[in-house]
Length: 394
Ligand SMILES: NC(=O)c1ccc[n+]([C@@H]2O[C@H](COP(=O)([O-])OP(=O)(O)OC[C@H]3O[C@@H](n4cnc5c(N)ncnc54)[C@H](O)[C@@H]3O)[C@@H](O)[C@H]2O)c1
Image (cartoon, rainbow, N blue to C red; front, side, top):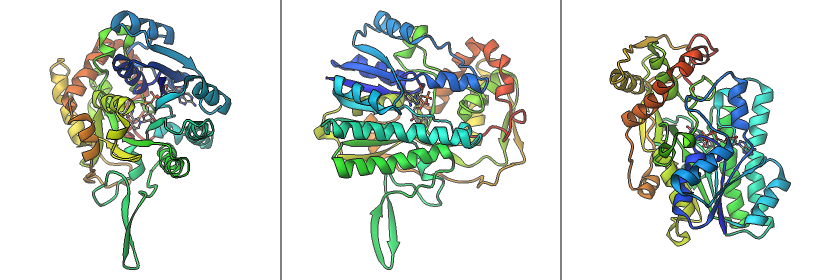
């Protein structure tokens, strides 16, 4: 028996595979087509942490952490024959599906990238669901990192899952509407709907983990050896807002907040994201809250201005003197959106948040200041104004 982690060369997938392998008796198969390495190169970006080759990573995991149960399989999940072979040979008990093209700005570049993103993400998920079903692997727990972006930014508190709809005096709980705001985010709305159908039609146990914006540069396992570092991107397309602000601080530029910047976004530390995924993959099926469960993988909502101010404060510990500047907002958005989001199920899964945002910032600045020459050499990849749309995307 085994556990499969897809997207295991990526930012979230790699530390998740390490955590699971560290706790599991089973073999842990890391699956990836290495596409992320190519996308970042394509947009002129680079990881702030050195990303070693797959072979080096697997070797270092054995040397530094004693993990002899970790293997890597290179392949493309959009190819059904690859997925069939993977699943029939290894018959996994659980799959953590973290493979996707995860960048909204990349998916928005043009129709070709939007098509690529939608085909890639949705085809991969459908292939996994159909392959499990058609090979009688109906008990395999399929866990996918979707995104809190599927909820959009509604004017009411976001539930952990469905929504109550009222029509003609009758009320019922229905799947949350696809309110995603980018071609990428919409792939996850469609995945969420497809996962629900796969559960209804095939009986697959599903955990739809709606991942918030992830912060931090590593986990206990990735810090054990520098060859185990997970990637840390900071360019406009692949760096989340906190990483780009940290890069601005390291390169000596003020942090630029559009308008009031009081709109809050949902966040989770990498450590807390990895812990939840590992617990789901290794958990007792009888202890799951349901055979189809939505988790909001979020520990806190934080405003853009709070992000900038926290980074400015922590940057002081590194003798980086960073100002926070407000600019006129080029976008039409509610600059005070509250983003209230329920997370009781996820919170109880991980037993409460372990890494505060300021600690995640410290972790990120540690990594970026250690390679500040790499960050500054790529400042044209993250500075607002240099790139279209200024760079405040998630
Ligand atoms: N990082 C975040 O802030 C965040 C927020 C919300 C949701 N998520 C979701 O979490 C998951 C992991 O995100 P991440 O930040 O680690 O992204 P990532 O790009 O670092 O990792 C995804 C990995 O999947 C691989 N991949 C993509 N398509 C593939 C395919 N067809 N076959 C095989 N491998 C493929 C990529 O090469 C990459 O290594 C994604 O599903 C993403 O949508 C991430």
